[in-house]
Image 1 (tube, helix red, strand yellow):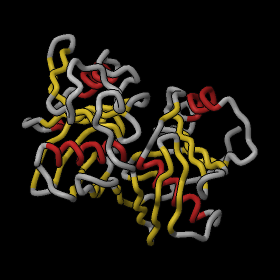
Image 2: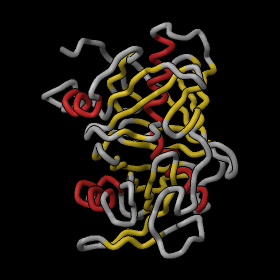
Image 3: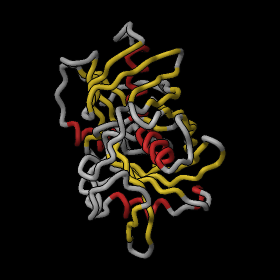
Image 4: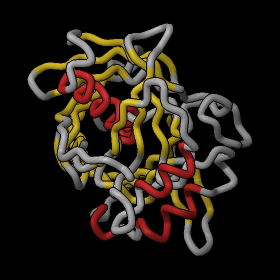
Length: 267
């Protein structure tokens, strides 16, 4: 399945036991496997309608994944696993509300976490939000704002076009920087109009991806904290545009299309 170019293998894993980290590494390899940004499992839940687990291509398990959650909901509806259009989904980051309407999936991503110990980040000052924090790299430095959407994000706003930003070299350095004990996702962002942002994303455990749901949410939160946008933002990513709503207090909501691309059997 894909959502704004963020592609996932989705599997009904009821009553199924596997070495998921090893399996996802094989399945997600492009040219040698199916090829995907991650593997999503549909599982039963004692506290919600369903439970979602999501694994990155390197075998690590992600706490949250907005585009993955939207694909998850579309899968449930398309496969007839639920007749509900308003769902609760259990994730590692907590229970998430989701709404389905004619191909568009709107999901509640929880309230952003901004305290250093909640993100987590290792900084000298415990005051927050942490905006434009200076990160020293091998031969450069980046100012980034820190947000957790159930998983950690470092967001940097730049004047030069994001298309020319050296993400393939800077992204790995930010992901593994000592500031982030659990590693981090990294977003580089331009403001391109009123309420409109353009970005590229380096995902923890996956590298650069066409899109990232939690990344779009983190971008919108950081932009609002910087007073660049108000309650709504359109985040343009290489794979498509996602809509994010945040009133500055409550949950962040993420909206956009999600669709099935093909199905098959892993042998």
